[in-house]
Length: 129
Ligand SMILES: [Zn+2]
Image 1 (cartoon, rainbow, N blue to C red):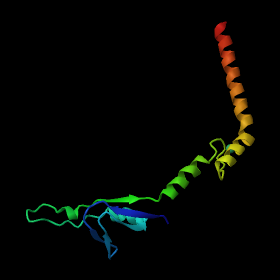
Image 2 (image 1 turned 30 degrees about the vertical axis):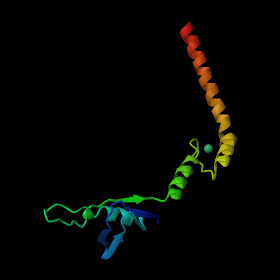
Image 3 (image 1 turned 45 degrees about the vertical axis):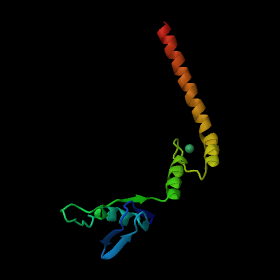
Image 4 (image 1 turned 90 degrees about the vertical axis):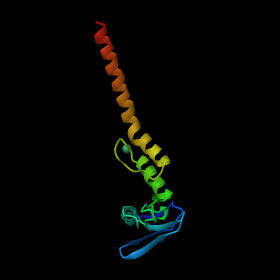
C-alpha cells in the first residue's frame, strides 16, 4: 500500500479525528498516511471554529494537500513507456525495449511502410489515367 504525505498548508495546526484517533498536522508540516486514508482525511469536514462575530477562524480552514512519493510516480510513468505499443510486451529498461523493437518489429515496420508506399504509388497511377 502506497504511503503518501498529507501537508498542512495552513499557518495553524490542523486537528481532527480519524477512525476515533486524533490527527494533528503541524502548521506547514505533514503526516504520513496510506493513500486511501489520505483521501478520506481530505474529504473530512474541518473542525470549524467560529470567532466572536460568527465568522470562521482561519485556524479552522482545511488547507490540506496530498503529496504522492515522486519515486512511485516516476516508476509508474516509465513502466508505462516500456510497454511495447505493437505487441504489449514489457521491457525492463529503454535499452531492452529498443532491442525488442529492432528484433521483433523492424521487419513489420518496413513492410508496412513498403505497403503504404506501394499503395500511394498505385493511387497516383490510377489518378493519372
Ligand atoms: Zn513488441
